Image 1 (cartoon, rainbow, N blue to C red):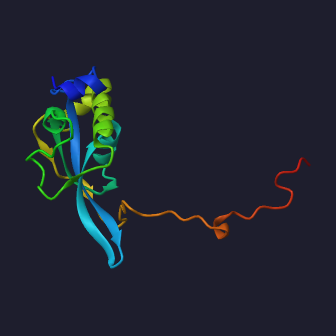
Image 2 (image 1 turned 90 degrees about the horizontal axis):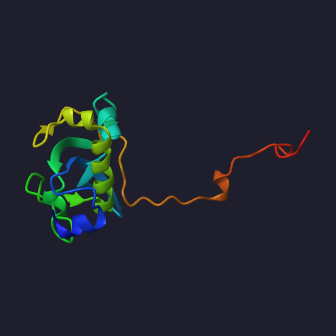
Image 3 (image 1 turned 45 degrees about the vertical axis):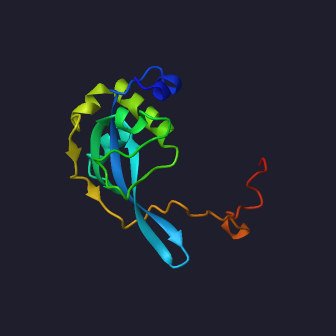
Length: 153
């Protein structure tokens, strides 16, 4: 067991099962949006939903153990993923949380057996996942209410 994993998640080991997906996301730049590949842990409930055919940014997902990602102090990208891919934000915390979902729902491990890849998702980038989008709220966003909405009648 790795020293960093045993410190932050003593209930997990390097051999703990988890699914990791390769998502196509976008970064907003002055010239428009630029696609990037992002590796994200996929919790069991999300994986089950993906098998039902919902549109997703995931091109494919691979079942692996935590070890190749979390055996060092900082998360690393294993060779199973493209070298130009990036790990998602808060990767370690998200990987630990996702791995725990497979311990709670072990039958979800049957969807993608350890060491295999599933690529028959309904992959779509029609609704772009923009990672650095800013949500600027203005007074025009407020919902107009009737004058008596908060009055007791």
